[in-house]
Length: 196
View 1 (cartoon, rainbow, N blue to C red):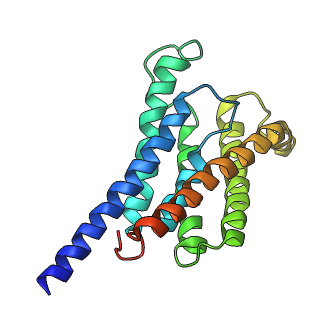
View 2: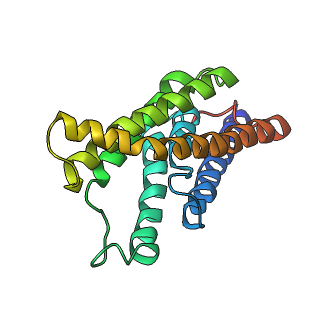
Protein backbone atom coordinates (compact mmCIF):
# COMPACT_ATOMS: atom_id res chain seq x y z
CA UNK A 1 0.00 0.00 0.00
CA UNK A 2 2.74 2.46 0.94
CA UNK A 3 4.72 1.57 -2.20
CA UNK A 4 1.71 2.06 -4.45
CA UNK A 5 1.02 5.49 -2.90
CA UNK A 6 4.69 6.41 -3.26
CA UNK A 7 4.65 5.30 -6.90
CA UNK A 8 1.51 7.42 -7.53
CA UNK A 9 3.19 10.42 -5.88
CA UNK A 10 6.27 9.96 -8.03
CA UNK A 11 4.07 9.65 -11.14
CA UNK A 12 2.24 12.84 -10.15
CA UNK A 13 5.52 14.73 -9.75
CA UNK A 14 6.82 13.45 -13.08
CA UNK A 15 3.64 14.61 -14.75
CA UNK A 16 3.78 18.03 -13.05
CA UNK A 17 7.43 18.52 -13.96
CA UNK A 18 6.82 17.45 -17.54
CA UNK A 19 3.72 19.65 -18.02
CA UNK A 20 5.26 22.75 -16.46
CA UNK A 21 8.57 22.15 -18.24
CA UNK A 22 7.08 21.78 -21.71
CA UNK A 23 4.88 24.84 -21.18
CA UNK A 24 7.84 26.96 -20.06
CA UNK A 25 9.95 25.79 -23.02
CA UNK A 26 7.19 26.58 -25.50
CA UNK A 27 6.44 29.92 -23.79
CA UNK A 28 10.11 30.88 -24.19
CA UNK A 29 9.65 30.62 -27.94
CA UNK A 30 7.60 33.85 -27.68
CA UNK A 31 10.82 35.81 -27.19
CA UNK A 32 12.37 34.48 -30.40
CA UNK A 33 11.74 36.45 -33.61
CA UNK A 34 8.47 35.31 -35.21
CA UNK A 35 5.67 36.48 -37.47
CA UNK A 36 2.98 38.59 -35.80
CA UNK A 37 0.54 36.38 -33.86
CA UNK A 38 2.41 33.14 -34.73
CA UNK A 39 2.81 32.29 -31.05
CA UNK A 40 2.28 29.32 -28.70
CA UNK A 41 -0.01 31.12 -26.26
CA UNK A 42 -3.37 29.68 -27.32
CA UNK A 43 -1.89 26.19 -27.76
CA UNK A 44 -0.43 26.38 -24.24
CA UNK A 45 -3.82 27.36 -22.83
CA UNK A 46 -5.66 24.52 -24.62
CA UNK A 47 -2.95 22.03 -23.60
CA UNK A 48 -3.10 23.10 -19.94
CA UNK A 49 -6.86 22.65 -19.84
CA UNK A 50 -6.55 19.24 -21.46
CA UNK A 51 -3.84 17.84 -19.19
CA UNK A 52 -3.97 19.46 -15.75
CA UNK A 53 -6.51 17.74 -13.51
CA UNK A 54 -6.31 20.63 -11.03
CA UNK A 55 -8.09 23.56 -12.71
CA UNK A 56 -6.18 26.15 -10.67
CA UNK A 57 -2.93 24.73 -12.09
CA UNK A 58 -4.52 24.55 -15.55
CA UNK A 59 -5.23 28.28 -15.37
CA UNK A 60 -2.21 29.60 -13.48
CA UNK A 61 0.60 27.79 -15.32
CA UNK A 62 -0.15 29.27 -18.76
CA UNK A 63 -1.07 32.68 -17.34
CA UNK A 64 2.19 32.89 -15.39
CA UNK A 65 4.26 31.81 -18.38
CA UNK A 66 2.49 34.39 -20.55
CA UNK A 67 2.81 37.08 -17.86
CA UNK A 68 6.56 36.52 -17.42
CA UNK A 69 7.21 36.51 -21.17
CA UNK A 70 4.99 39.63 -21.51
CA UNK A 71 7.18 41.49 -19.01
CA UNK A 72 10.27 40.62 -21.05
CA UNK A 73 8.64 41.48 -24.38
CA UNK A 74 7.12 44.76 -23.13
CA UNK A 75 10.33 46.01 -21.53
CA UNK A 76 13.09 44.60 -23.74
CA UNK A 77 11.67 43.91 -27.20
CA UNK A 78 8.92 46.54 -27.54
CA UNK A 79 10.55 49.43 -25.68
CA UNK A 80 10.07 51.64 -28.77
CA UNK A 81 6.28 51.26 -28.36
CA UNK A 82 6.01 51.89 -24.61
CA UNK A 83 7.02 54.96 -22.61
CA UNK A 84 8.14 53.31 -19.37
CA UNK A 85 8.49 49.98 -17.60
CA UNK A 86 5.27 48.14 -18.34
CA UNK A 87 3.75 45.18 -16.54
CA UNK A 88 0.30 45.35 -18.11
CA UNK A 89 -0.27 47.24 -21.33
CA UNK A 90 -3.63 48.75 -22.18
CA UNK A 91 -6.18 46.09 -23.03
CA UNK A 92 -4.10 43.10 -21.93
CA UNK A 93 -6.73 41.96 -19.44
CA UNK A 94 -9.03 41.12 -22.35
CA UNK A 95 -6.35 38.79 -23.70
CA UNK A 96 -5.87 37.16 -20.31
CA UNK A 97 -9.64 36.69 -20.05
CA UNK A 98 -9.54 34.99 -23.47
CA UNK A 99 -6.71 32.69 -22.32
CA UNK A 100 -8.73 31.65 -19.26
CA UNK A 101 -11.73 30.89 -21.49
CA UNK A 102 -9.46 28.83 -23.75
CA UNK A 103 -8.11 26.82 -20.80
CA UNK A 104 -11.70 25.82 -20.11
CA UNK A 105 -12.24 24.91 -23.75
CA UNK A 106 -9.37 22.46 -23.22
CA UNK A 107 -10.99 21.20 -20.02
CA UNK A 108 -14.43 20.73 -21.60
CA UNK A 109 -13.42 19.21 -24.93
CA UNK A 110 -10.11 17.46 -24.24
CA UNK A 111 -9.64 16.47 -20.59
CA UNK A 112 -11.22 13.04 -21.13
CA UNK A 113 -10.77 12.50 -24.88
CA UNK A 114 -7.76 13.87 -26.75
CA UNK A 115 -8.65 12.59 -30.22
CA UNK A 116 -7.24 14.29 -33.30
CA UNK A 117 -10.68 15.65 -34.30
CA UNK A 118 -11.30 17.11 -30.85
CA UNK A 119 -7.87 18.76 -30.80
CA UNK A 120 -8.46 20.33 -34.23
CA UNK A 121 -11.96 21.48 -33.23
CA UNK A 122 -10.67 22.93 -29.93
CA UNK A 123 -7.87 24.72 -31.77
CA UNK A 124 -10.16 26.39 -34.30
CA UNK A 125 -12.81 27.21 -31.68
CA UNK A 126 -10.16 28.65 -29.32
CA UNK A 127 -8.69 30.83 -32.05
CA UNK A 128 -12.17 32.17 -32.84
CA UNK A 129 -12.84 32.89 -29.17
CA UNK A 130 -9.48 34.66 -28.86
CA UNK A 131 -10.19 36.67 -32.03
CA UNK A 132 -13.61 37.79 -30.76
CA UNK A 133 -12.51 38.68 -27.22
CA UNK A 134 -9.13 40.25 -27.99
CA UNK A 135 -10.41 42.38 -30.86
CA UNK A 136 -13.33 43.54 -28.75
CA UNK A 137 -10.85 44.59 -26.07
CA UNK A 138 -8.67 46.31 -28.68
CA UNK A 139 -11.70 48.18 -30.02
CA UNK A 140 -12.59 49.35 -26.49
CA UNK A 141 -9.07 50.40 -25.46
CA UNK A 142 -7.09 51.46 -28.53
CA UNK A 143 -8.86 54.67 -29.51
CA UNK A 144 -8.32 53.75 -33.18
CA UNK A 145 -11.96 52.91 -33.89
CA UNK A 146 -15.23 54.74 -33.34
CA UNK A 147 -17.19 53.49 -30.35
CA UNK A 148 -20.17 52.23 -32.35
CA UNK A 149 -21.13 49.08 -34.25
CA UNK A 150 -19.42 50.29 -37.41
CA UNK A 151 -16.18 50.87 -35.53
CA UNK A 152 -16.39 47.42 -33.92
CA UNK A 153 -17.03 45.78 -37.28
CA UNK A 154 -14.07 47.65 -38.81
CA UNK A 155 -11.88 46.46 -35.95
CA UNK A 156 -12.89 42.82 -36.55
CA UNK A 157 -12.31 43.13 -40.30
CA UNK A 158 -8.88 44.68 -39.68
CA UNK A 159 -8.01 41.73 -37.44
CA UNK A 160 -8.68 39.01 -40.05
CA UNK A 161 -5.09 38.88 -41.41
CA UNK A 162 -3.82 38.36 -37.85
CA UNK A 163 -6.33 35.54 -37.33
CA UNK A 164 -4.70 33.46 -40.05
CA UNK A 165 -1.30 33.57 -38.33
CA UNK A 166 -2.92 32.97 -34.94
CA UNK A 167 -4.53 29.80 -36.28
CA UNK A 168 -1.34 28.59 -37.99
CA UNK A 169 0.75 29.26 -34.87
CA UNK A 170 -1.76 27.47 -32.66
CA UNK A 171 -1.85 24.47 -34.99
CA UNK A 172 1.96 24.34 -35.13
CA UNK A 173 2.56 24.62 -31.38
CA UNK A 174 -0.47 22.43 -30.62
CA UNK A 175 1.00 19.67 -32.81
CA UNK A 176 4.26 19.97 -30.86
CA UNK A 177 2.57 19.98 -27.43
CA UNK A 178 -0.05 17.28 -28.02
CA UNK A 179 2.03 15.17 -30.42
CA UNK A 180 5.14 15.38 -28.27
CA UNK A 181 3.21 14.52 -25.15
CA UNK A 182 1.55 11.54 -26.83
CA UNK A 183 4.96 10.27 -27.95
CA UNK A 184 6.59 10.80 -24.53
CA UNK A 185 3.66 9.16 -22.76
CA UNK A 186 3.82 6.10 -25.02
CA UNK A 187 7.50 5.78 -24.26
CA UNK A 188 7.39 6.43 -20.48
CA UNK A 189 3.68 5.97 -19.61
CA UNK A 190 3.36 8.52 -16.82
CA UNK A 191 0.50 10.79 -17.92
CA UNK A 192 -2.40 8.40 -17.35
CA UNK A 193 -1.45 7.32 -13.84
CA UNK A 194 -1.59 10.57 -11.93
CA UNK A 195 -4.09 13.35 -11.60
CA UNK A 196 -2.43 16.74 -11.33
